[in-house]
Amino acid sequence: MNSIKKTKLWILGGLLSAGIVFMSADHLDAPDVGGSTADITDFYAFEGANPDNTVFIVNVQSSLAPAGDSATFDENVLVEINIDNDADLIEDLVIQAIPRNGIMYFFGPYAPSVTGLNSTINESTDYLGQVEISTGATATTSANNGISYFAGLREDAFFFDFSQYNAIIGGMAPNGFNATGNDDFDGTNVLAIAIEIPNALLGGTFAHPAGTGTQVFNTWAEAKTKQ
Image 1 (cartoon, helix red, strand yellow):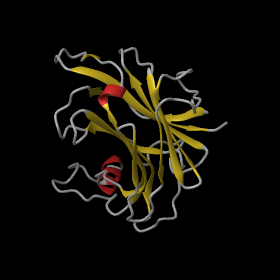
Image 2 (tube, helix red, strand yellow):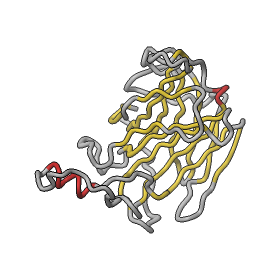
Image 3 (cartoon, rainbow, N blue to C red):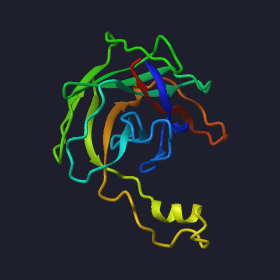
């Protein structure tokens, strides 16, 4: 599979304070994939309710109909979460998710045989999981080896006054954003993939480059299409 889109890179602490979220967003602003089934809207990584776990969430396909449950994951799109344990900006571990016939299948974390833009799936990795893809308000989850999985339609958590942004860019709003803006993504949906995984399975960490004394790892997400 070849990559057609990668999110911005963020550093995630191996030990994070509860409530801290690092995210990257490009709702509707990635021209090569905007509006496609491979468009990543957000990537979240944060400490789980159990502080020994980390939660990863990758959302795709922005601005889906509020009550629609007809949107589906593309079976030709692999979503890959990458983890860099030694600060060289090359993935040491990957977690992969791909849908088939209403089921989201998960592979990893495991050390990939190839890195970068191309990916393969190791179907014999020690860590395998699957979950029925949820539709509507129904939430279906599953757990295996201490790892929890979810995939399905969910309301978009991204807050942004897109109309005011366009007015600013067009020179029609010289005073910038209003104190209380309008959430133009309110009531719209995304397709979400979520995985909660024990930190012990995520490999090593390195010292934060800013010298904070915190041990961290790098993480980013990709959507890759079958070629």
